[in-house]
Amino acid sequence: MSHIELENVKPMDIEKRSFEIITEELGDKKLAPGTELIVKRCIHTSADFDYADNLYFSEGAVEKALAAIQKGACIVTDTQMAKAGINKKSLARYGGEVYCFMSDEDVAEKAKELGTTRASVSMGKAAKLDSNLIFAVGNAPTALVRLYELIQDGFRPELIIGAPVGFVNVVQSKELIMGTDIPCIVARGRKGGSNIAACIVNALLYMINNER
Image (tube, rainbow, N blue to C red; front, side, top):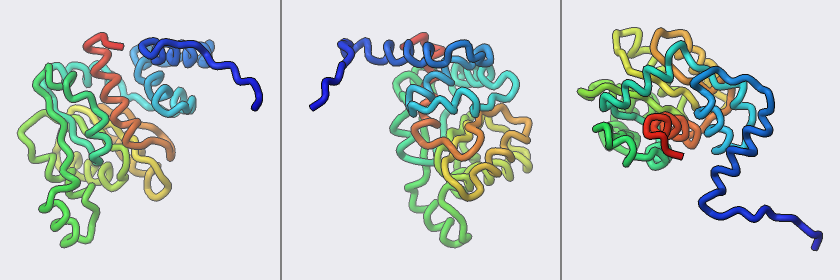
């Protein structure tokens, strides 16, 4: 067996050391002011430095998102995985909850009846909630397409995190959201995922709470 040098890092220091490595490897790359922690957390989650280039932030999106969370906005996800990954304890400090309607029976029935995806139907269900809403989409482009349609009809979410991953209509659905006047944080291109959607929400929460 070849000799492999391992870093001696205490468990509590692993995340700190990871961020040091990310900062070192980014070198003199300029990130938009106020977005650095979100970009670095996405890189930390994925080990993918492309997020330094492909994350799009609409004007004032971070500030608006932080204000919405502090006023008790709720988060809606398009997967149970993203819901599981969001720090619900941090969100609850401000009165917010996390919702995912993907497993609801009525959503499954309506999707079958309409010949559409559960993700699309679940966005429509969420839009009827009596709360200020932030959407964290990490899987289904159809969720973003439905949100775009709802926005055209006057729906006004506080923020859309658009990070579906894949090949069919993924890029196009993200472009639709970037073309609206709704605050958004979008992982341009094919990359993304439920872990990235949750990670962006957590980065916003940690920015408020000054955690990590």
